[in-house]
Image 1 (cartoon, rainbow, N blue to C red):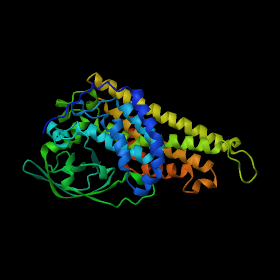
Image 2: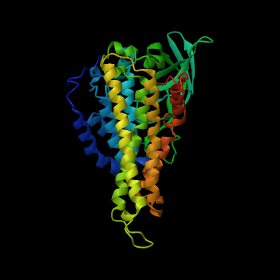
Image 3: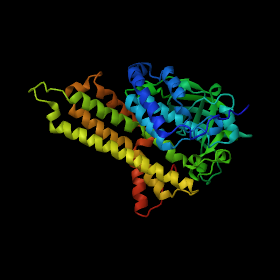
Image 4: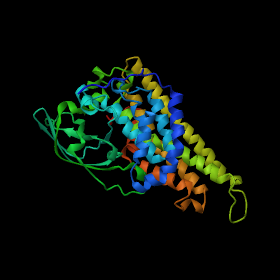
Length: 400
């Protein structure tokens, strides 16, 4: 297979242009939102738009036509798209981050996926719910994995699992890269929120995965991956766990931002049915809007503070201290809870009309609660671990 080499410099697209592209696409995503949810899958038109805008290439290696963009810009694009259509923003972030993850794999794995077509996409399901057997030159993988967002539009999948180790050895968690011919998609995505993500099950019956098409989580933790031999940009020295969790939590910031704008537009001229008063004069409505504004601002500031700090450290060739990773992991897990808080308050202040399906807040309400249910968006475990380390107890989470 021949490598497709980028014909443009990686710095050719400035951050404002990426955001402008996202804003220009937002009206189309809003117009397709109902159809996206009805289909329970992102329309092909939206995937084509994301390709055309270059969003999937933002974190892709330059050797395969990628831009190697700053991750903060990538996540701002995700926020902007999720504000218009939460399912679409979710897919851009979750599927787009896999182009960054593949860059951590051995070069031959990257060639297997992108050697003939650098536009090929990858879905995932990282929970280790399948069976992995060690065989000659690799592994035999079988089982079922759930929540593979955007899998209908992808030709490969990344599946989590533990490689067999000797008794008493440290667990060896890996991602296994498997082509579409070796798995099937089971359509069981009948849900109340994030309907358009098409996060269906992946079923594998004894697929062979060569050693080079696996990525060890410990390599991602140590910031020393096989792909770093060829992808030398600091972007690819970021810890695997820190980047992945942000792809799963960040769309909730866009949901809160979209719900706030929808609330302000709907409430500014609304008159209460009971007494004819302006709802905008209601202190509860005013405080709901103020509180949501502060929470959105807080989430974005923390997101960029943490990413900027990690990028500065990897640019200096440093390892990112575990104590900071523990805090940053909790910060990410807290995002969706804060978005739920903001949207629930806006929803309550909207009165009885908010329970109708066509109300502009109803979709955000359901979508953000669906996002809150994702394992990496549950703050309790990450919070307890942060509390442990602050109290001089050992860290218990290595997905950092």
